[in-house]
Image (cartoon, rainbow over all chains, first blue to last red):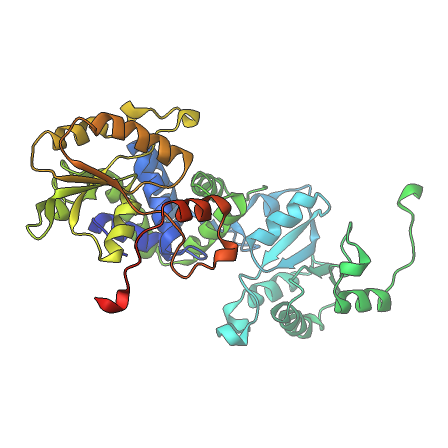
Length: 205
Length: 205
């Protein structure tokens, strides 16, 4: 691109480094910012800078937090004997949004992915093992993506944890609620028949 | 969304203000920034802030510039008797990329759009008229989008400029190079037949 200004070019280059944002989108975003009030742009830039400089990771569960220990880990209403192992903070948010989970979390910070050079030592595995050694934990539930990386990580973690006297579970896999059978992929459908569960009427609750 | 950190929430809110970026994309971008080195994020934030505070608009053509008068307007290789009127700096970049234009520009800063409350007084029309009064200009070529707003702006500007002793032209409209006739919309095809031009073989040049 033929920029008329180096300042513009630099800003576009910075935005284009973000994932999923190309040169054209970056230019559109930068031109939008140029049209905003100076104090609004200052707020944008200082919020980003502040985030990176002041953010903390919870000492217990490694989730993003404003305090040394996050709100979930300090809450007395939570079941600290149940740990849900997730890939990153987005998964914590997704599970929290369901309002169906009352335990605590452990954020791995990624999944084992040999293709990307990410091994077990790059993830928060040792801190998970330490937490289990504290005896308070009764169950660990894995909520990892149903991908090759998720399954690899699950397999590895299961091996690391199997000597502990705890229940190990994973979130249920099958067809989604509202999903129509004819559009479900074969593997999911096949597995959901093979791992069929007793019918419990939701009316009878 | 259920944020575990207010810093995170603020940063996501700032990104979600950008056009075409929703909450989920904003979160993805912010988490990406969190994984980067502190100095890289600082560079991102300072580049944005610097852009907004130090950017200038060329005194002559109103294009984005690092100097009071932009490189195109100060260049002696350019034909200052030919002014191309465009909506914004992206159009200048697009035309510059063609390497087919040797005149100078005038950036309107928008198009007349009653629906959005943008009238002629919000655009750089008076500064264009002033430039024409300087006698140096022989031709004004309008390179505006072929939309209702573009046509309205063209109509208005033509009325404002018709008393000047200059040639007024617009960029050619018709089917695009590489375009297949059967996929061209009816209005474009109809107009391009009505406004047919003498055939000039590009081989004979």
